Amino acid sequence: MTQDAIQLDEVTLRYGQVKALDGISLTIPRGEVIGLLGHNGAGKTTTIKLLLGLLSPASGAVRVFDTDPAHSPRAHELRRQIGYLPENLSFYPQLSGRETLRYFARLKGASPQEQNRLLQEVGLSHAADRRVKTYSKGMRQRLGLAQALLNQPKLLILDEPTVGLDPVATRDLYNRIDILKQQGTTVILCSHVLAGIEEHIDRAVILAGGRILALGNLDELRHAAQLPMHIRVRGSLPEEGWMSRIGEQGVSLERINGSQYLFTTPESEKIPLLRTLVKEPGVKDIEISEPSLEAIYTFFSSQWRM
Image 1: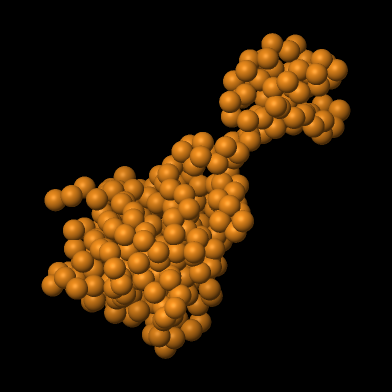
Image 2 (image 1 turned 60 degrees about the vertical axis):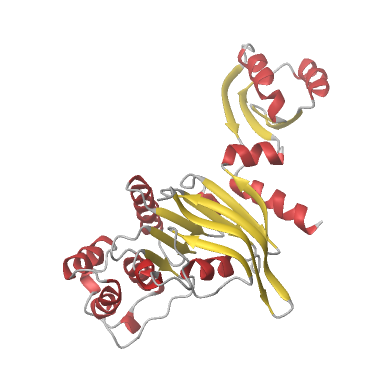
């Protein structure tokens, strides 16, 4: 059995004259948390539908746990191993939260004990017997997460999972994702809130126009983008000497106020700059900010639009 959860091999798919995916190849190992990023229309939803078996590629191959999710005789069994939280949730409004979860549990073969446990874990025990039409957006999102977690899925696909969630619920969601990863679950995270997912993903894949613009962990993407980093210094510096020195190193300096300085430096100059800074008696504190996932995403997206 392969150690890969997902394999896309030169996958192409069209909607009429529009090429939604254009020869995408992607391998996701079991137990990896990957961020699937891209603007609206980039191909994220199409990729998800392929993984769920709702669409078939015009060319290329899709495998989820060694199975064709659309055409294999094992496709029904495979879907029981996949949890999916769509961006736009839709439940029967007249059913209660408990009845809704029971309905999905029967489809997945989950036990009543698991249903009760999940309702408690997502914070809906107190409202389990209320009709879904009385739920707030955040409560419906919690119910959606509960149904996605039924039957302890081997693959969990979350599309904008924090919509409507308060900060505490958002923190709990990401803590749960970290635990699921430790248990070997493969997780695909689609989100426009890049700051939220940055510390929880192993790799990111950035799509645009149905193609992969960039793929890798944050260090690899930072290296590929060659974006500058920022070093904030608190204290005092001999300005005249510094201004002449940093011009030769390709480092820029901005004085923020009387006691703070902001250096913008290429990665290659980070260590030499830090060595120089720590020798300055007037320096009281140094804070390093590497390019964020949002900055990386913006860089690669702008390259595609050029």
